[in-house]
Image (cartoon, rainbow over the protein chains, first blue to last red):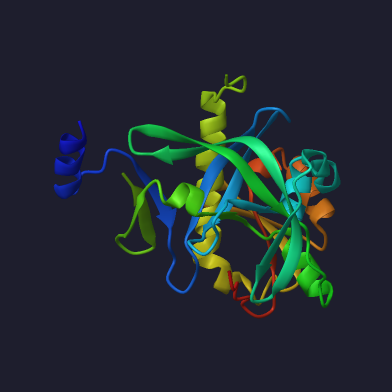
Length: 161
Length: 86
């Protein structure tokens, strides 16, 4: 089966291919259905495809929008600190996640043990606060490494396997 | 065991959301001048665009228009492009 898969990949035919939006001068984005079983959440989300993030991450604002209370996530008893070159922030874990992507021949469903929810950082001004309200989620290596990333024709890239 | 099932209607929503998101990503620079400092929602693959000064007001407008915010591409339009350093 593995040999067949390698043969097919060599022949440029991926068994699963998720199309990413890769507009020149911008990040790569992908959309998915985000499902959290125990909180009964099923909603569409936009993700930046971010190989610099280990775990798929939700900003607090996005999480709040879909009904996740950051403070209640403390009941998981796992507190995390996350940081980037712009600074650091507290994070929590939200477990029991499924992401459903549109793919060739239908959909592909990717389970995740958890995603990180990142507390909003302090903002410098009103513009930053407003921008943060629509800041996208980050698709991390926990999902990306299940695929190969290929840049294709204008404005598209693909996660394939 | 998975208890939340994915229905055709969910995939239809995802398709519409994806089309709107794609349109917004391709056209955001053209919108920057007209909609600077406004929240915008793209619907109908870019054929409809709603705007408001707050996210709450925008969500109300989307609902009054008869659509769900879930299928809209929503963004705050900054005056200058905002580079994300991830």
